[in-house]
Image 1 (spheres, rainbow, N blue to C red):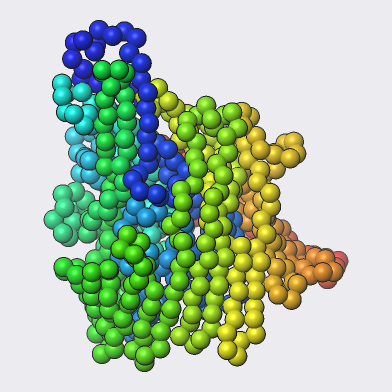
Image 2 (tube, one colour):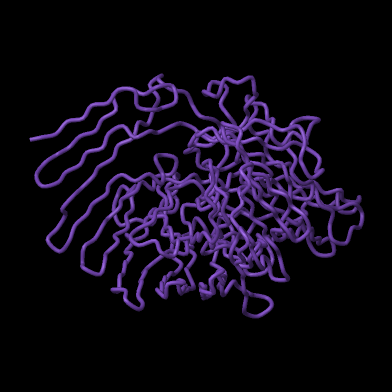
Length: 582
């Protein structure tokens, strides 16, 4: 990182000025292994999929690739004469950071939004002379989407001395968040990528083919552009209301002796929230935001009113009925504890120590290379009681998940250096799920993860029991009757990372069914790249489609093959072969 110090002459004369730096990702006790603002866990976005295993009475969905879990519960769902969802749902993401404010303390009201982390300059781009072009990034210059470097004067403010914070440490690109789903990384469209032909100019996309055109202005007066998102099913989302959420502070200490200085930079998460959703037939839902209230109104007459109180959302009113939300706990760590339904029944929630002690991290690249491994330090249990009386218990603990041949990029921060990418990520992973209660036969799911293996592409830091280092990892889920499912994923950085390779089902007698999956790793000219991830140091998995090429199922002595022989320009199956043997 460059150090731009407007230092008075006596400091400039010190040719051997030594620098030392201490950096912190944020204030408080957030769950991150970062020491320099690098949120390693954010790099899990888009890797793997959230899946519901077994009874999903409590809205739990788990990433089988990482073990991470989130709960999404729909309180209000009003059917209408079109397919647009008019509902109020809320999500609890386990292992989230407490430095990000949420609309329901530990839970979040599910509103679609686009987000990114920026410094004091706000949500601006590096498009020369036009920083307010946050959406219309030139397709041939995707890196211009980046947040700029931020020069921050020292806290003393004397002599114009300051420090330049490089965006490689705090800007991880943009992402799309949708209700009940994990966030999706957004990438700048490749110049040759397929896109709708409708006289619009498209600039962004996602791996699952959402595309984004640009709106010239925001709906709440914030300078700059908004986004018009086009879903694969034809629905359109207006993301044009810009809001900010504090995301902690980065601190740099530099200089030496009497010439020691400190600069502090506040980070902010910017969100472009939705103001309108419209389907291809012109049916729509509008979102009206006023102080303490959000009103959703549909073209067919459906409406939901969301009302806030001192702790967050206090009530939801729909169709003449009211849902109430109660919070408990100390002032510094209050949580949603009860949801009262219109008929008087209720959810009760004990989310445990959702935000527990900080995960140990790398102090600098020297520790990283020498073999320092952060140790997971905490566990938690979430207990919920459904309005029906059923009880769900979810036991979780922090564990380390590895990546094979991860990129090794060490960036200087003063005199220290920090790894911008990581081959080890800490995850609050699900270990056990149990459902019990009156009139309910107890059901359980036990999660067993394969041992940690990890390596850097340079070979400097390898945690493996075999050579070469395994490129896969697995999780086995065992039910109360002894039957089990095992899922194996690629963990090779930049090469199918997060993709399921094998699914097995078995019992005490062995494997009863096995499914092997293979993916097309190159286009062979049939389809183009999707886009370019402008994130400075990120896996580029989303940039080139890797569609399923074959699925081989083995069961009861029979083998069944599904193979795609030809893909179209969107990487969709065009010619398929199905066969079986013997």
